[in-house]
Image (cartoon, rainbow, N blue to C red; front, side, top):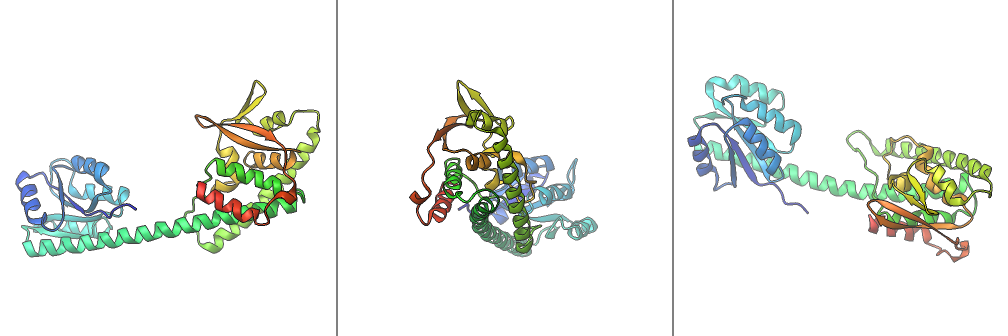
Length: 325
């Protein structure tokens, strides 16, 4: 778990102001300093994860402080931003507040007690934001794992409904390959998607995958048994693989895990379902062996009898995938 940011970055072109600020504020929190907008941006780039509060003087040679605060707003929104400025420049500070670029302004010359009180409030706000984001990340991780499990069950339903009744050992082979590849939960943009919309989109996605699998089944049937299965798979993967000395090497990991990992909004394509469809079609089975540099060797083998699967094979497969990811 990452630590909460606790430092204050102060940006001012006056050396004495930097030293004075650091002396006044360092008992409250560690202080970083920079002497220009560009130096402030460089400090943010290097230490953004450590910085809770950014305080910038307004009047500096070259770019003004509100430009730096705008930059931080766009690139490091969790950092609490404050502007320090002379009383005669309050109009610029108020404009920065109204535009959402700063949390508060501090007038110069500083009142020590007011300065420390404002910075203490800013640090508390930064801590609350950090805690909120940490809880949100944990929630998202749980929801992403749940979505991955739901996708496994949807694939099983799609394979049973659109393809063939003896789907279980074939789907298990696909899930085994996903475990070997370290399948990751699909990304979810919860800022633009609520749960009901996600479930509706995922259902439509599952139906589209089933439709593609059915189309693949007809295509594979047209190939007949005259062609080697690996040659058929190589053609189906459409450039994501190559055959060398009779061995099939897959170069594109995404082609092997697309049904589980792809974002909900990604269109369902034939290429994304080719590996699963081939496992459903071929009379045997296959496993993947890593070859280094993101390459995977497809190794054919015998298909286990359906009765040899554990009764809870799907739950066990989900648990293994989650651990591998």
